[in-house]
Image (tube, rainbow, N blue to C red):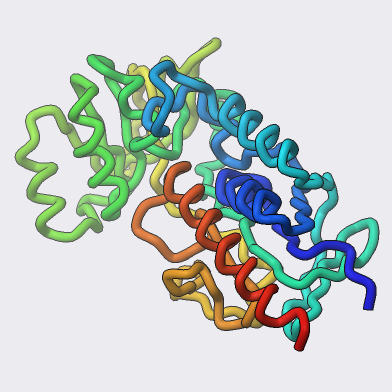
Length: 309
């Protein structure tokens, strides 16, 4: 059977790009399928300060562009096609796009995850301009400023505590009268003088001309609308894994993230998963890049061991 590529990588975020660099550098005929903008979620980040090796801040777009060029230099092919289906079982696998069906030896899933959106006016327009979904990524940009965190679970409260390292004031906006975070995390928030919790309230609108300036809130308990002047808002109302292509045949955790072993292998031989789609503790550019390198290395070994069978 004629093969189109040795390895297909589905998703052009940091995990997929890192996998492409390692796979193509290792001599594999490599393709990356990306239906949107190469770079994934990081292109929404104006400044990235914590990616190793860069003294100056780079935008997410710039980092993704550099990674793509590096992969291109090693021979990676990029196809701006939407993947509709993967057929991962057996030694020869298929990737079906809106253009054709490709035959490959190995597949790396790098489809990522999307933060759950509030869906309020101003959110989309100001994303990357004061609206953020990652305090670890963007928190240092708000030194001595006022920020808000929307949510009341573990992630929301932990990130609010993280933000107090930089911001002079952190509001936690929660729609209920109790935080859902674990007791230890709740108590840390209650003790932190920089944190103020806005109970029983929801965000109705995010305002600002070129950058976030104000939140319009509604208190459900007393049916009152009010304003909160801030410099940035961080959303922690959930994250949605983009698992549609593989959810019928790979092992997922309760939240729908792919379960892999240390080699980034799924339960299907020759099928790997990297980046935010995976069950993991930390979702960052650097961890996605690590996943991609590992998966490409393991895929190269799997291809070598099975191609003559």
